[in-house]
Length: 271
Picture 1 (cartoon, one colour):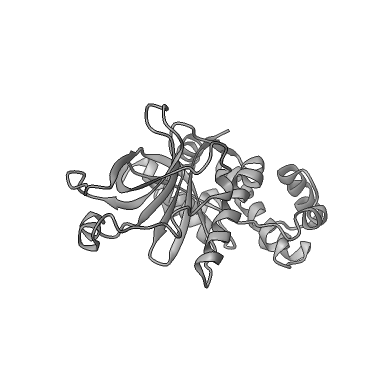
Picture 2: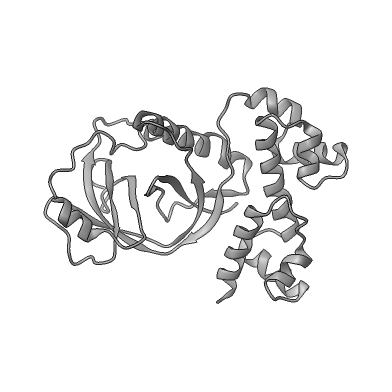
């Protein structure tokens, strides 16, 4: 396993163990590095130091805790701050407002913390649905596949396309030559590009680093659609402004449907 994979696993470990006493030293021991070597590799991979990264994700979680009803003191302690004043200063630097102001200003808004992870290049085979109008608000039209007809390909042929253990993607796209109108693509990740049934097309999605957002589940399709739209809006209207990342225009963003779970993958690079 190489440095990139190690650091990806490290970030995943941090996101799952935020409330533990994680330090650069403990992470170095866990992943089998010397302290200084680990710090160098982590910064080279992530663009920021281990300490900065830990503080950033803990403050992001603290913001979620505050919006979910935790007191400022509870959120500060859970984030590893020993004093409210230290938490307040760090929170102001991260969000340009103190925790109380954040609760008032963001009250009722959608918020979540993504997982940053690599996703290798893949091919998907699917249907294309033309945009209904020239000026389309993509953030209002997530999950555009809902309510569409999928009868051009038999269930047997569709099942042949699906790569084992992989899901389906949905994405707004322009043709590769940029000459045509915006369209929505929906279909499964496939292991064999040689079999593309009539009525479907294949797309190649490049490898990239993504901010992966888990869409809240819903009891109905309509509810899921609303949650997907809320997630898209949160990402581009709120999350990017307060994060240490910017959108990677060389890659592609998409919805990812895996069983009962729905995710939004947004390609990112460090600011």
